[in-house]
Image (cartoon, rainbow, N blue to C red; front, side, top):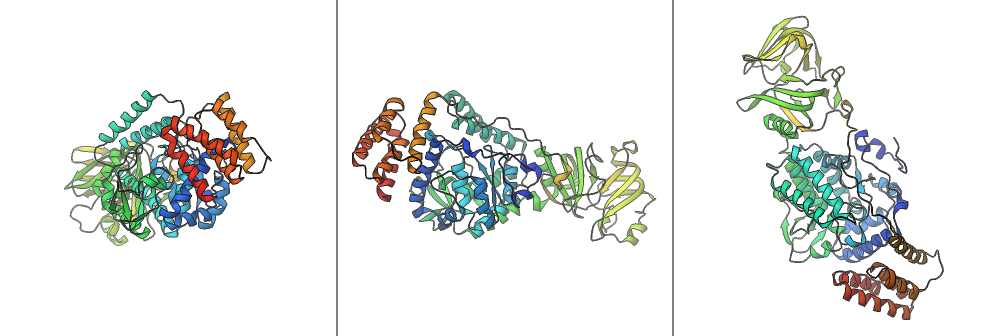
Length: 584
């Protein structure tokens, strides 16, 4: 269970294999001095500003989780500290499927996209990156109430049923985020990808459970505000990690709404700043709303609607009957009467389980071509099969070696010779196996003797329906293939030269070299990299720190020229200069 450069601990070792397939090495040495400067600028600016507007847990958490302002965190070193609060972090490549993302959270594991935004996107990127994940999500989990909300959210969220269109939208959003962050993407390609996302969003039909719970995730974990609605504090990672939006969200331009279950129905656009935000009075209220939503999910309501959601998803899911028996597979069809399911059918490999553990002899090898069973009571008998005592079962010939016709309500008939049965821990019968069995609904044959043994799953109703299998070991889930990996910037002679200049400055700050010439560096920047601004801001900070007055003037003159030639980044230059002047 090892990936190159990945250090496992007791929390990560609990992860099932189907989640481990998403983990990749962080490859810390791939970060350039420019990447480190981007991290440092965002963190210095954020911590300076957020000290006044972020929830106090954020600044406390920065210290507790070992996240440095000076360096991009090495997350496997960070893990040693996170472990103290019962969490861990793993690196992944950009967006991963929503169910997997949620399930990681259920295991107390933060998923961190290990790439870092380009300098050109320093204020905001639609792609997940280490600034958003590491500096946004990690510190706030040091708050125990919030950490429990996050874990519980993952536990419930990973059971949410998706629609077939959800996955299509996930792939489209992933593609858009990748090409928007990639340095050489054509504008026409980006516009085309944006239109695709817009068209999909407009034609999703009835929102699935996953779509709804993702809305709750967005308006809390990503973009949540907390406290007084007139003077809220920030706790959402999307705001904590965006130097533009964290300031903008505090203005009257952004509508503040009390956080309630209604946030379910508010969609979002990941490529634009949010026009409204929700304010929760405290972290405990988040869990209250989550439980409200969970009460509406098929996970808790089951029934015909829950089964229908699984059929519509055309993906691996599970129903649990009233006896506790769980059937996992791709649900294909349901017969219904009086708005109740009376017979269900899966297609392809199916597994049966009890309490999330596969029943011996009932894995996908035993049920490779689907599984069908009636639901409900026997006709004219008030007592459901599961509630019958051994004496009752014997009286109705539900007994080993007996040839019996079980006639269910609504015209489902099961006729065959009983071989054996399985009981649950409470002694209720949960499964009856027949040979020479025929199952019919009116004149329609549902199962023929020549198909082999027939297993009847006992249950008068569907108590629960949820995404994924009951027992993860029942299915081969190591099947994730990324349609498109994150695009890395191509190195050129010019970009390598600029990286070296940044490295020289970093080495000087860290005491690895004793001196360098400010004027030489500014001259090289003016000549070879006339649009770069961040290195000049770093040089100004060092000159100011070392009281090199003439160099300070020279750098400020260059920065003034940059502000005029590139007005779109003037506020970033001003921000960097202001932090230096305030701090030193």
